[in-house]
Image (tube, rainbow, N blue to C red):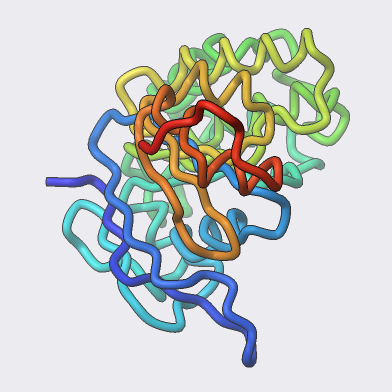
Length: 253
């Protein structure tokens, strides 16, 4: 069974259609990239999958369960987490507290308001381990808002992992980073998403073609191609969408 299924998915604001009858299946463990020109609807598609927007028509199934029009926190608790283009952390809490908060639900703490988290040994040990994994243990006591930009992105990825997610959506994970920062971020993404399903929106084509098992191309809200990287690279419709013309020698995917 596909882990995620989009069936006839559409979204419009007033009379303007942003997403148009999208059909897509993501398999467990797959690394899938969604690319397309600016304004193609990529972030809107992520907002629909993660529950930030309601769908206009169609359905979204995660592990066979309909999740369209459900609250973002419900979707996260089912095992699907995401990052945003603009970093989404608790800036006044410490790095340690950010990760520990994200671990609470997945480690079964639920609404136990009377428990002292400082004495929750398993929870604190898991937090320390996760901070090691994302390379932020030395920054554990720093307010998260004081981290460098690339470190904040690493923290956000750690928060997604802490939620216990099986599938992670990354929206432009290396945007605004230097070449060195982007290289380190990609290495971290590879490490912490090993064995998980990943969907990412990214404009750096070198990263996309290096990381993705499959690539879907979104243009004006429609998926015009979805295939392995080598076939996407040579697809005339994809070349036309990016370059405005068909590149000689291109072949259909």
